[in-house]
Image (cartoon, rainbow over all chains, first blue to last red; front, side):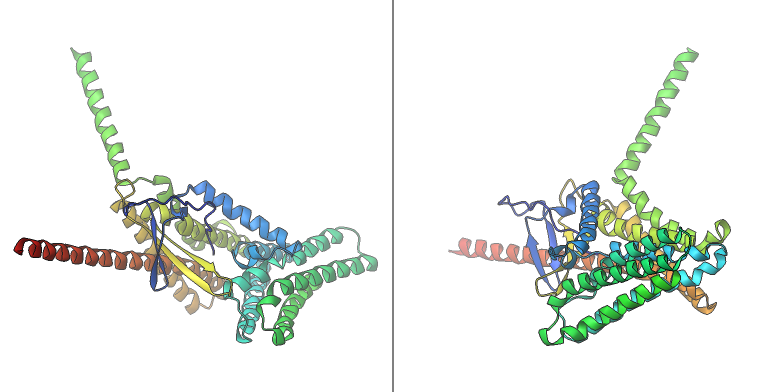
Length: 219
Length: 201
């Protein structure tokens, strides 16, 4: 998980060699950075910065103009939270027999992470300029609209069942699916080669289709 | 006379316990960080082993273990590595989508040296826990318990990520030290040669 982008780089030009610096090894060669200070920052600052970053990413799924945060400062907390929430909410019907809930719960995790992994490998094989973790981050965070749709469906299910309510749930899920696909396409399309965009976007479409199908069939 | 003796004995006892606590803090500078470094890892292992006693629900156990593993990963990567051994590793992605792994180590200074007790604690916990999870992996594989195998795979990947990251930081620090030592000796030799040539004139 990406950590620390230093918030306030120190620009003091100290002359001595024995400064309080952190020495970095960047791949094979060494980079002597005298102006990054995050190795000695207080723990609360680290925690708050990471929490703020996660919150910002959730917002940027809906306000897609700002692409940097999801692509550059990737982290996998959002996908973990959303995957867990989705798996939990999809278990609601089977809460009577606790022992049976296990396999379906683990199933959602496996479908989510393996599906995201396969989509990423596909886009990399097509020559896309994106790393594994960036793609997992984007696909995970863009699941947020579908999770909101799932919450909406659960709320709707508390009312007495009519066919009108089924149509409502269906529309909610379609809306969530379309927004998820649109958001992830907006983030990932730039990283693909221009003549292969459709080839790269189709698996993303399929991935969210499968997740939307899970939502509508289990509620 | 008796009361005086009692007072003297009490003050001696107080001094020795005070010295012991100072001795403890001379060994370990960050007790809270050390505690949390061990707590999350051991709690995850303990929960995996004993969850059947407390809850029959696989889901609750799964979520608890995954959350403990995630907190442990974040804590070891972002907090305890920095505080206990002055090492840190992270990932940075440039504009071309290439990811770079950065390994930082703090240069040793007088006020921020690494305490050997803390360093031993850090590395022992970092090495022993993945070994334990490997044992769990073999057991789960042999007994065909695939849903538990999923948890073990997640645990192994997170623990090994931290282990490999910090080993690379440590190797980087060593190579820097040997290079610095090499430079130091080279400078010494050159200065001696210069001194001798000055003297011979």
